[in-house]
Length: 402
Image (cartoon, rainbow, N blue to C red):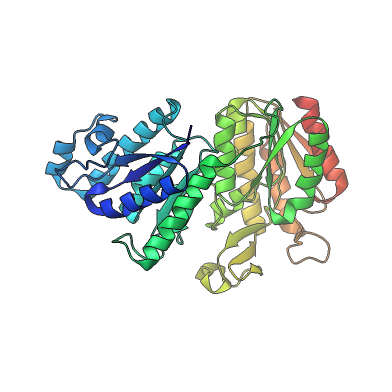
């Protein structure tokens, strides 16, 4: 049997474009399930497999009532709720294998609402006019593939046809791809990594994998931390090697890679063993150098690349981070160990490197020691975070307590 792609489309405004996309998907060897999420037409499209009223009814809403309100914001919100509920149910019933949508701001909101409720690994493709901007609110912690539409989704022309044909090939290829997956019987360990803590995590990961665990490494760039916390709360994770807690520095300083105020809370709430380290707390992340907030222009800054500037955290900020981390870890229900590398917490916090600032590190550990309760174990190691000694120690501590 052919695999099936669910198309989420506003047929009241973009019927021609969605029918073109549907036909191209079929040409690429997949079946289709076309779902109408338009609200401005009284005529049901005969090409659709599921109509707008059915979508809205899934969440307890009525199309006539929404049309009478004549409020686009309300319509997008209600339709997003309806399509999310419908997509979840239809996927659980085995009605489709992958999903695609296209549109501008409203279409992207509705389309990605359907995608975010689906499990990781289900092919998800959003062709969007806003795909090259900040898409974090649309993607969330999901594995949605955002594809720029180049031109607006407003009719068919030589450019839109080319983009939609590529999108059709992509989603058909994804649903038909052969997947040889890893052994799912292995217990999962979650770890956090940044470029400046890569050696620490890589070395610890190898040790844990030799012991039979599967290690999921999350890039601590905001979405990485959020995704890890979500998976922990979902019950997938056996233990946590939270080496790189740098997202907390961005949350404190207003950096661009914050994972939100609830970072470093899921493992504690779930009672899961966690080994925590201060990886990259010596820095907060911002955009290009010229975009730095005025209040930070005179700080110690290091351009990481043309789009990313690193700012050294101060003694005061490090003390605040020590307090924040202590408060979070004190609430943990499971075994919690904080490991402090005496010789530095990142590649830039090392002898001869620009972020080597002993008074800032001292402020952090002093505050942490003062505020940690007796339920949290503190281990101090006379090494740098990226030394082999540190990696071996944190891996051993995790293995001893899971």
